[in-house]
Image 1 (tube, rainbow, N blue to C red):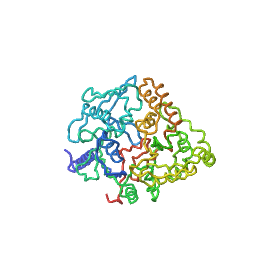
Image 2 (tube, rainbow, N blue to C red):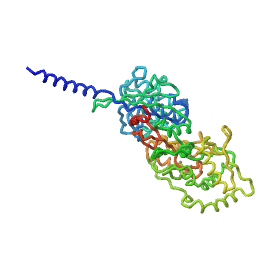
Image 3 (cartoon, helix red, strand yellow):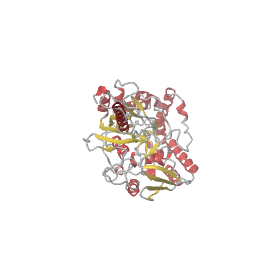
Image 4 (spheres, rainbow, N blue to C red):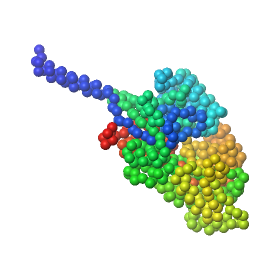
Length: 494
């Protein structure tokens, strides 16, 4: 028979073990992360209705994921689809959906997801990626959990497109995760929650994000005051607001974004109809001075529509004049302008820009550079005709086709139908090498005709507190709110 002391000792030990086992299965909460996106209040919208604002894109990417999604580093990870495979000929992508439910408890089916995706690429859709996804032939639900996307020709960049918020799965106004919008949310702020299970450690943790939106000056001040942990959605236009503050070290992060940042000729009836004038204007821009004025480390000047590193396309060759310092070019440029215009009055060029301090820096630089040619520059009034439109867009994939399709005659007032024909041929090409060759020819023609005046890559920035551990910059400038791993901060009283 055991002694009373031994029995008490055993009971105490068992009690400790039981407490430990119970705590091992409890939820580990990391605390809320306050996130502010520059722009209007966040809300779920239908991507088929048109271009997304930054707050709308962040909401869709985090509460209405697509078949796949981006992780913090911009890599493809499972979304609604837990796994997928590509057929040997590259013409079929087969996705197997994970078991999941809509917020109201109904099961998510392949039929519903296929219906949503077909709607986004339909002819009547205003989804900004519809044209980019023109190689899709069919989207077919094979079973309740299997979807096949059939292509007319191989597209190795399909997955990054499907991960974009423009391809988020919104069904009857509801999102599909990974976060859910808490019923306790009080608009205009959204409380986002999700539970993540760690099977190895038998622990589940709760991630909570308070998502808000604000104008850039307000968002930056809130960050400096410690009222928000993460600011997303910064562009060249609002960068001066961040530069004007005494920010903590390493708080300002720039995405290595790829895409288009430059001037699109918009007046088909003025002086810009002459390619010689467009070349003269492009050569006169001191791109490095613009980059220095904006204060973007690592950003490189660009004088070609394409950038290095695009799939299947050789690195573009910069024009010969780009190797000559701008100070050594200006006298010859001024003489070229005198020959070009003679005694005619020089044009005053109107530039359509967003109303922001970064735009004023850009306008000031153009005025100085083009002033050497005797050309005046002014901002176009909202809604009024412009000679140039600023294009500031991040590429949704690593395909050269996206860059060039922005300049088709359907979109660009000053264009070349030969470029359109080359792009049509590239879309229908079944051999990748032929497709890449046609895209390279189209890019060369765009640069020869100066149908676009490139300046640099798009500028995208964020403000990141040291309380946020899971943030990373990436080429798509898309930032998941999952796994931010906020540190506990007792000073904030939370």
